Figure 1 (cartoon, rainbow, N blue to C red):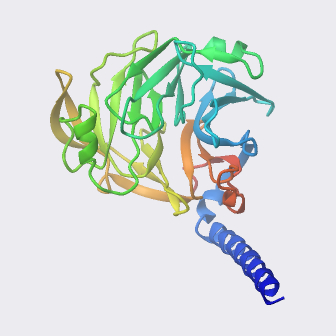
Figure 2 (cartoon, one colour; figure 1 turned 60 degrees about the horizontal axis):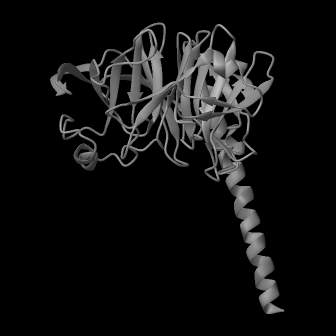
Figure 3 (cartoon, rainbow, N blue to C red; figure 1 turned 90 degrees about the vertical axis):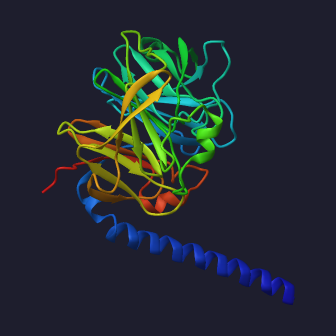
Length: 331
């Protein structure tokens, strides 16, 4: 009987801890995240959350008035891409590489350039092969539910592919580092002797061609802060990054012009080196833990979160199951 009693008490303590966590999360959400939610509107529920989908990337197609949501699965099966239409209807497709093999990537970011969809390849880390996929956008929309679309091309890059974004005729590709330490080991393993020794993470800028391909050498390099999951540029020219790691509080940082640090040489090309850091940061806005990609559209910042997926669940207490549109210029 004593053993049974202890089991019951253990279950009771566990349930109490869960309830306390939920209410603490709620209080924190109402206080710390007040600015964000007071100036945001809920746009749509993130698809696939209870189907083992872990959302990572977000893009808005202005022509189609549709959102594209990328990510991976908790059980490391084929990675889906969701299309959320203006009427909130959803279509799920799957992707293959140019060899016809099913993609199992994290797909940390997706972005559109002309008639192409560019997606972050690899697993989001900064080791091993890092590259981007290029898909025909018309093939994406024409595909039937649960059908596969094959990549036209894959192009290697000199940086971990945690996020991607097209700004004008340029592709920005950035990596993720969560411990705040300089990436010395990365410089040794992926041909990065050009990287500044004290850099925590790197973002590269590539000039895009008409077919969404680009030369191996980037046109600019940026030192960036750690724990970055996504980036965008507002119409005012502000660079905005989303930062998160685990259940720690997350935020978006806003930056004006980056700091110039001179030049570096990558693949025989001499390019400018810049830095986005605390000195260039003009403000930050707290957001719920585990924010992922962010995208600029309709004069708003749309945010994606992975905390409410079946892998984590606790984000349900932070309203993490929805994409929100944040009015960053609120008065």
